[in-house]
Image (cartoon, rainbow, N blue to C red; front, side, top):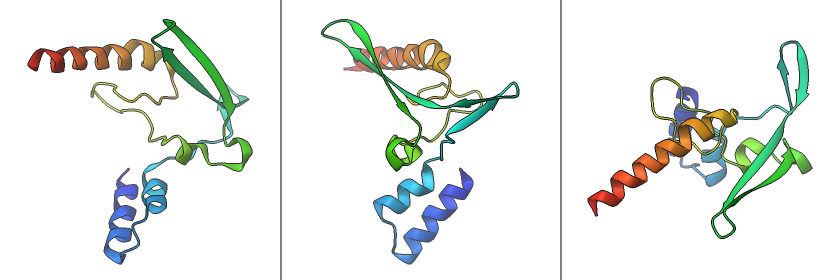
Length: 117
């Protein structure tokens, strides 16, 4: 992340801070394959649509870097929160974080905000 901030600063100083340069500076590349326990797995992007009208979670899938696009930049992948901070990112490489950390933390934050109004 420090490297990304340095690159953004260089672009800003040189006057070349475009949207593409900014996104390329903060978004991480997602490898097409990942090795886990000695086995290679093809990675897939999973989209979760929390449909409030039907009260269902709808799923859709896409292979990483499908159609020649860079998934990291396309979906603004900046990684997971690291350390003792509350998990608030809705993009994660571990769905367990999404359901056990992110959603409860966002609900708690929304509840605190609505009580202040």
